[in-house]
Length: 398
Image (cartoon, rainbow, N blue to C red; front, side, top):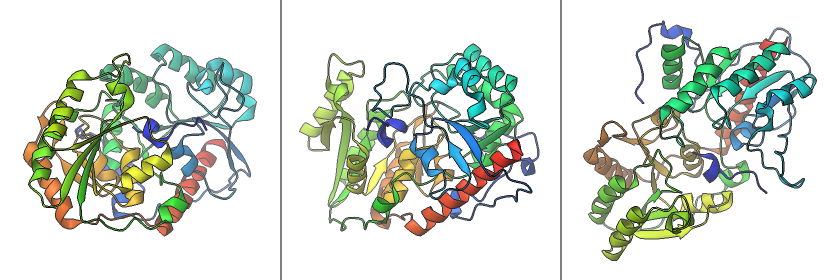
């Protein structure tokens, strides 16, 4: 199946808001695991057809009702050259204004999530104009205020400057992100939590029996621009060495060790191998995990440390919460508002607060096991998310 795995798919300070905070519509925040309030819809259409960009992403699938609720999402069109058997959705065909003009009778609402990184502001403006021309409302879920794959924030900022003012409704995942949207664009965003990432049968499975060894993991993937791995690993290596029955495992993708690959990182690899030689960590080099391999990996850890220096929200954090793995997240972005996690100081501007990182490792060591999502909560939350989305869509098309 060529739908991107969660590992592929995953992957700031809060500005003062000049407007009153009560202008921000906030459903109960997931940190408290509260219920999502859904405003009543006076007259709801029997069927609402949504062009989700993309429909195949795990976030979109798990914001949809498990049982039919009157909302149907169009299947992602296959990009040119992709085999008929493929479910690959990128680059999204629906972002083409010509696709909108040819298929506007097939959908009632256009809901954008991901996949517009390669689109220029002019191309996004053309998309917005095509939707307006055909009377189709635009909903945008603001997952990222800073794109983790783009080292220069100006590119993503320019895209947001087109999409956010043009959207008929905005959704985001945390109150902090909603406040930033209000401050930067004067727009109100409805706050709805991220749904479960791990499929429910796996989420309901008991976590493997606790080990005597406390394992801390850092996954550098293919070294995205938002990662500063070595400063984090250096601190972890000394901290973990001071704890009884503890070990540090670092994972990287195979392309980081391949001299012919764009992701090749010889300096990082050399220092990691030196730390291995000195007995400070285990280094695992592998191809990108599929979802089941990723779940096995996360369950093998007691603490997953996210080495990010910028970003907004994280599907990786949600997967760890589903599986009962503690997370140490940086204080950039709004990870701490997304799910219960430990927070340490790490930003692009300020660098790494080494003492705070040491403290969260010791705390995770002393307080294990980590809290874990329950199947009951995630099922209820998914139903409430689906109802909230349906209510929002119905308010646009009734």
